[in-house]
Length: 419
Ligand code: HEM
Image (cartoon, rainbow, N blue to C red; front, side, top):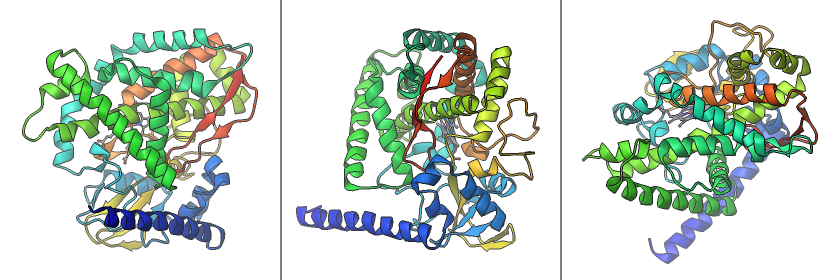
């Protein structure tokens, strides 16, 4: 690209960002458009009233960009499992949730058969049986981190515990040596923020820099493991490299595994501790019986999941939830809203760790893109809630929680606690 055309497309991009912002603000404040509302700061802290509003208007609601949105469990579940929907349409519509040229989301942006082929390569590393062999290591890591916090004086649960735990776990699984937790946390939050769209030129610059850094880390690691393979995911991927499984395919997959492996779990820990401390009777139930931890995990993921929303594009014209969906139209599935659908979960706005439900929440999505790391996430979360209840039974919040400025990924950025 010539310097002139790159400058002019840069200026166009900047213009687009600010126009989009103004349009969103107008749609939120004046038109009360649900998707635009979720990007307002007050709803980023508590988006659930918006989801209730969407659901109260009907199972399928039109969006300002000519697509559909749903907070109904039945619709979200069907759309995520249906083969008549995909994560990538035949043609980009311009409304695709994530700009394809800015972020390569690997598995999350691939349809079968490419998706099937790639998922098969890494799935063996994440089976519940394989994961169980990590349980002791995870418990140890949880213990080590809790040994270092100043629980009496108070500490930030996010930066001192919730963030370093999953970063070290996924880095070890992948085989990334010498992990710089703080740098990874920064890359994670910049890239996860881009799932909502790029907010500013500064954000775009940070996004590009984070992607470059991660590419560099993995390029070096591929080279290392080609010569010195170990029992880790990167070594296994490098070994399976062939004409179709090229470094151009493996690199985005590793970046996804790394980021999906911690950005979600960090927020799930934060959301979980927040919910437990805001409901002291539930915290007491856990303290009295820490073996309730796995049940706590499921209720946390139902009540306040870290991934709030995903989307699918229709592969053909169809009738759904009483409306006509056209081929290449997106359905935005508000999975966090589906988890509070009163048609499926009794008294859904109540956080209740004793809840028994035969229906699984949608925090890990559904269908072929169901979270590959769910068994790992469940282990990390259960080990965390159990250890906190056993070691810090007096845990309580000591300062103001600061929530992330993001919509798709939801959770506290700072959560001061003591115990
Ligand atoms: C509480 C923690 C987690 C939550 C709530 C979560 C949530 C999700 C969701 C909602 C999706 C699917 C998105 C869609 O359908 O469009 C997904 C996919 C995925 N997750 Fe997780 N995740 C978590 C932890 C993890 C961990 C620890 C890993 C480990 C590497 C991981 C790896 C992945 C991968 C690779 C995919 C893509 C699967 C595919 O497209 O086939 N996740 N996750």
